[in-house]
Length: 195
Image 1 (cartoon, helix red, strand yellow):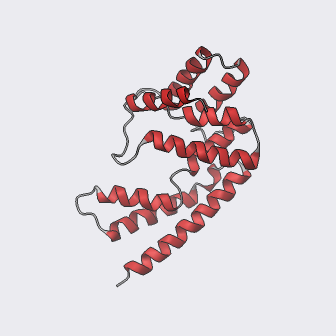
Image 2: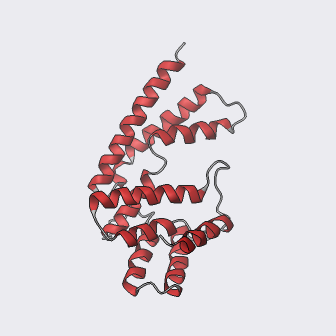
Image 3: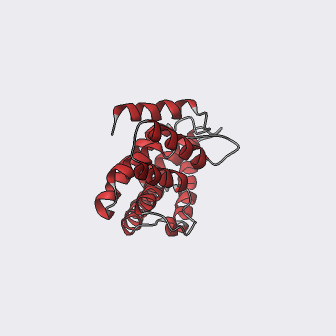
């Protein structure tokens, strides 16, 4: 991964003004998605350069009046073209960025796009869900362990209903494993909170 490209994405995300939780850094999320994408590529194959570049650029764009993936695809197209990427690589990366959030669309999508969709969805699932929900509750007027548990329990129920959004066999397997760990953590948390 080119250092200049990473710095460009970091700066673009920092200035794009996308609203988020005060504890959530979108660039850090991007780096975790990149790691998930690399893990999935090892299992599923696909063009590693396209996957890594698309993962890096997937959240680069923001405009409150347009889908962020559309804005991101435009920024990605301009950057990669300006920096001399081959046209076929630009097209593949732009497709993945433009459709990374279209999990409920039938496609057809390239393997690289499917991997990016799964990588983006796998981030902030599993144990990180409890961390996310706990930090969200901590910002409330009356935070408590019980409130954090209840929020995480509700999130877990939602996540169980979203299994169909995973597009690759490896993504589905990892998601099931994450849900299993999350379920165990919630069981232990309930046990620890019982009085």
